[in-house]
Length: 407
Image (cartoon, rainbow, N blue to C red; front, side):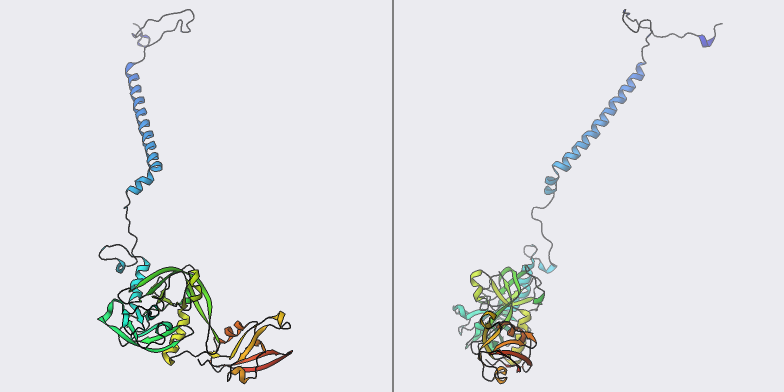
């Protein structure tokens, strides 16, 4: 019997054309299994579909993220997006629109700013010099304003914002300081909204500044102008018309408009704190440059305290009217040249004469008349200061007592 291992199985045959130069000459070719071939073809097709799908998804994602991301984001953002409110109290109940910091300042400080007039007809008067603003500094009726508003007034009238209590008040003049253009008046009322004082030494150039005035009561109540702090630590010299003595005040420069109406009103920071008292008079020489001036609140507080206590401001007084002596014109000597010595002053009592040159005061070298003001501005009446003067080629030492500057 034939061996099973040597059994020849039937195979499929196909006809092969034989050519002389055919390399397959003499070889037998078997037809591939059709089922297996079909399976491989199907798998290749599925793989191609998967690859094509993944490639399409990646391409679409790239186009969406890179090409159209901005437009898609914008389309999902509200056109009128509200800013975060400063506080729950800063939302207008009618419109539900968040208020900015300036709105907040106007709301918080506005009730403390009043209209002031010296017109006997009250707020019906039209004289520009008769109307201005004031700031309530104490709840029992004390108000600070500019002196030029109430100067020589027979009747001072105050109107509270929003016509509080429905009244226009007659005010009395507590006292004033002509040099700083500050005055204190008082009305007979209680529980008034007093302003909050800030610290003017902490302000910086570029800070927002809000000037608030209430010049004509209800007609122009809460007049607000906005600007920035243009200059700090700046001083202005004001001359006493009686004695010729010059006083120096620290002021704040701002481009917020300060006109006749809000002169005497408040200059505020963004926290709703008073950092200055607006003054049209002190800023007269800056008018053409578009800069307004307020006396710094730290400077004003010292003056306000004195006016409330004494009805006036007393300043240490040296008793000299003069200028600056230049070295090239005075034999190399530079200092404060004395033109006039006020009778009865400490300088007169010390034997100082016109023509003398003060070269040293209180141990500090003097090179100009301004140095004298800087030296005595923080002194007290009665203080005795060592003084050195140059007279006709000789130096004379003496002691000068500061007296009261009687206006």
